Length: 330
View 1 (spheres, one colour):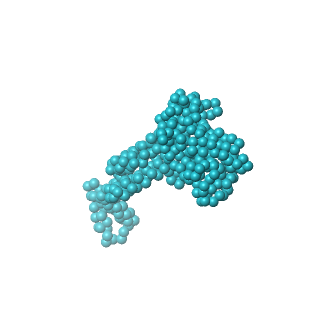
View 2 (view 1 turned 180 degrees about the vertical axis):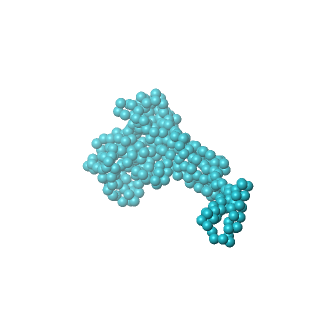
View 3 (view 1 turned 135 degrees about the horizontal axis):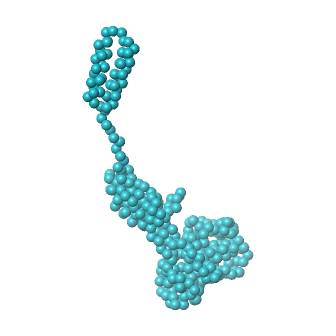
């Protein structure tokens, strides 16, 4: 460093001595060199500054099944240190969206799709119930918000509550039954009843299982064979695809209501209907109103639907050894 300063001073002096005379090309080149050296010295003397690393802590929410990060949040940006109450509300909303989904994305919560039997008595597997426990996720996020880190989503999976060895015997005895009737001339409506009856036939409802009519039956549209028929909407009888399936859901309700179950969701029609007594109906609409119940007994049962020329019968069957356990207490 000292040598550079000395060289610079010598050059400056040399130029100063030549100041009274006309500058030759050599002197001009020397002056340019001095200017360049001065700029280099200025650069050397500048204080060194380092870019600060972004040490802001983040929380990664991880899918425990794939171990992939599904969402990253910054507690600092969301006001964790300034307003904990507001921060918690934001986290609660995030947990709700992850569990239940949004208009654009599906959530992690999934209703159980119940297993069923085919014509040969073989099991057609459904899928278990999946529940993202929102309150637990919120607590886990709050616990690491000060330091950052990974949080695995608390997903709880519930399988159907029955034993495979019970399957061959679930048709043994009828513990409940209910029948409704319809007009044979209403072809479209009757077809809808038949299709929805086929959908709920031979469904296995294990101990603790939840049955959802909309989940089991699925969309009622032309692609699935459903036809235009009269249906009740807002106290008016109108034509709609799938009209008549409420007779299936109402017949099912009156059958399963005779065994130990818990009603989870049931709705009435806005007008009286003729195939069940007043107040004994269960109206449904795909993507809207549903009929849901939970088997609160300690044993499984089988739903069977018999579609006839002018009637629909829904039976609840089970193994002979479970018959007494499915009797509803008055």
